[in-house]
Structure formats: structure tokens, C-alpha cells
Length: 293
Ligand SMILES: [Fe+2]
Image (cartoon, rainbow, N blue to C red; front, side, top):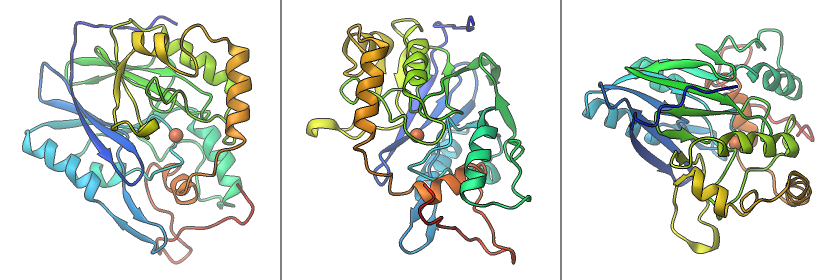
């Protein structure tokens, strides 16, 4: 697959860090117009209390309104297991299309079963406005953007490239953070390695924006790096590490990781494009499958 890379287009990227989930949401502005996209928004949840709020999403909305921007796209790099998407809330306020990888159908099938969703839960991705395949292009104003299919962390992961900026989702963390886990249902360490190679084959100067950062070894939170820096220094895949090395390391490491705190509500909401599920009477309601995950 040859991707339509255009390093001469340099979008303005505004990062919003969510302290509760260590997620970074982005507003990406077409340099030639007032059009923009949001990558990976966050809805706030106090899971213990079953309470949803929108402070993080409101900050994105306030910035877009304050700058007089027009929102074309609300992109999910994948079905996140550690935070809830605020895509429908943002769409209601600002418009824009919600897009995700076409393999969302695989994720919906897997978790539709685990959460014992009825037939009213569609598993065809129809909750989203657009489903991307490898190499699909779309526009943010005059800027042509494209999606790269990058499975491994989940079956529906995609990296989105806008001009000289790529949004890595959970393929990579900052060089000193390495890579994301590959042990969720449908995850695969070998696939993740191959997907990371796709990202690393982008131009060296490509700006790379992470979806998460946990400030390893006490350093301050960071989210921006480059393809060149990842190739040289990434602790899991940089410096010529082999696929076999990676699979062995990733598998051993994943076996020791705790389940993400918000995986139960995140999956139920994110597989519905950010909508909360409802019970048979129409009340917003989340489930907990016992020993299901
Ligand atoms: Fe993730």
C-alpha cells in the first residue's frame, strides 16, 4: 500500500491531556482553512458513583468555538479500553462525522457476546458515520488525510495521518514508554510489531502524536515525537529489535499487566461510538459481566 503522504502540509495540533486516564485528545486544524478534526475525545466518568460528566470534552468544544473553527471529523483511533469517548456529545454540539476502523465489526462481535448484548445491538459498525479501510482518504477542509490499518493492540486500530502529523493511537507510546499491550481479545503481538513497522516507514520527520503517556521513570508527561526518534530510541522496537524479540517481550510483559480500571464501561460505550447503553426501559445502564473478561 502506498499512502498519499504530503509533508508540506503542516496542521496546527492542539493537545488536551486528561489526567484521570492519561489520554491525550487532539484538535487538528487544516492550515489552509478554519476546518478541524478531533482525535480521541474523552468523556469523564466516576465509575464508582456511576456518574458521567463532560469537563474534558467541554474544553475541546470551548477551544473550537473560541477559535471559530468548523469541526469536520471526530476520529477514534480504536475502541479504547481505558477511557470513554465523548464523540456523540461533541457531535451534538459541533457537528462532524464520527469515524473508526472498519474492523470495528470484529470488536463489536467479540464484546457483543461478552456483554450478552441482544439483537438490537448492531455489529455492523452502523453506529459510526464512517468506517475506514487501509489507505482510505478523507478531508479536513483542504487537507487530505488518510488512515493506516494497524491491528495488534486491537483488531480495529488505525493510525491517522494529516499532513506531516500522524496520530499513533495505541500502536506506540513515547520512545521511553515503548508500545501498548497486545493481550486484549483480538490482540496479537506479532501483528502489533508489523503495524509498528508500517508507522516507522513513514518519513523520518513525520510528527508522531501519542494517545497515551504515563511519564515513565518520573519524567513529565509528553506526547509528541517523530518517526526518526522512535526508530532510534523506542525501547520495545527501536534500534533494530526483531519481531521474535518483540513477541517474546510483549507476551511476557502483558501477562503481568493489571486489567485497565475502566475497561468494563469503556468497551460498552466505545463499541457504540460513544453512546451509553440503555436497559429495556430506556434508562442509561452499564453491565458488569462476571468473570467475562
Ligand atoms: Fe487502547
